[in-house]
Amino acid sequence: MHSFLASAAVHPNPWMVLPFVSLLLCIALAPVVMAHHWERHYPKVAVTLGLITAGYYYLGLGAGGAIAHALQEYVSFMALVGSLYVISGGINIGVKGEATPLRNTLFLLMGAVLASIIGTTGASMLFIRPWIRMNRYRITGFHVVFFIFIVSNVGGCLTPVGDPPLFLGFLRGVPFWWVLQHCWQAWALALGLLLGIFYVLDARNFRRAPKQVRDAECAHETWSIKGLPNLFFLAVVLGAVFIDPERKLGIVTLASVVMIAAAAASYFTTKREVHKANDFNFHPVQEVGWLFIGIFLSMLPALDLLKGGDGIILHSPLQYYFACGGLSAFLDNAPTYLTFLAAKMGAQHMDVGNPADVAKFVMQQGPVLVAISLGAVFFGAGTYIGNGPNFMVKAIAEKARVKVPGFLSYLLGYSLPFLLPVLVAVGWLLVR
Image 1 (tube, rainbow, N blue to C red):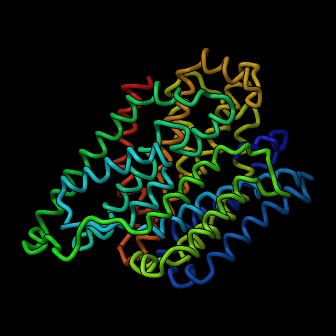
Image 2 (cartoon, helix red, strand yellow):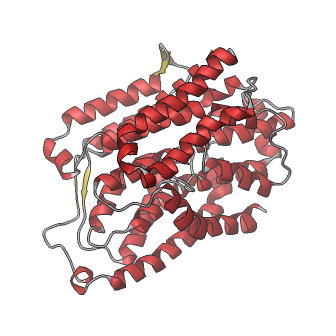
């Protein structure tokens, strides 16, 4: 994802954000008002809106390079998300007993910690299936939403491996342990508040459940893990993240090739009973693939308008926190992070592509970098499209017949009343 700034000189017409806005509206409203038609035709809608933008860039602006970079970004994104999905689908974690509020809270805490070690995508794909199974007798939408809040986003704030925006900063020259040193307090506060809110909600849900559910111990199940060889393939994918993104085989990065190869090896060597136990199929990753090709192409004008120099006129770290965060909820949070970083460095006459300038910026503008980092990572939980794992978790939960809130229900019923107050508290107490 490092290369999207190559299109920095492009100046699109502001009206060309309409295909992206249209796609967002379709994702939000179509499943509610025309669910059957949307399920059948969403690939056509996403690709068509993406092609409108691509055609404008190629024919109207002569910016074919911007399209090429967007497609390279998309391939890298899908290689990472898809490989982690396939490999985690070959690992079956057995759970014991019905999940009490305390067990659920501890499980989410464990997932959040692991997210900073193997990434939010890896932790989400590994833990979402056992999370659904352990709550199967009383699972509701908030179980899925808080899993996205905590494991798929906030948990990955401590290392560059944790979340794509932070990894982009690392590739540009931000020291590896800098995030842990400067963001751990915000991570602990946000995580503590979200876990506390979840515990209260889950305790209410648990008390409403029938007594036989509350007393269930599922004696036929025990804690277990099957498909252990896939942990090796998981390590291969995580190691591939660190391969120099400039090393390519044709137009595809070497890292993407390694990830795809690891996923293929995992799929063909995993025992059939493990895939069956996970109810594994490719539908969730296909849905993400179709929707995000439209998103990656149609969001080009929005990103280019943002990094057009005068589009970002901010002063305090708190303003950067909310501005970067607000856009990260609706744009992919990784390029949004890099856009704000590049804009701020440009205002200081520094080049985000120069490691020496990045090191100087880290020393001089540390609070701003903290604000941009926290905004991108935390607010990525604001909608299903804010961060890659969000849509994957939603798709897997829907495949398991969990009633998951739609785009607007997620935003209005959970993000605004529960997530936003937590993020405001983090900003006011630790960013301001």
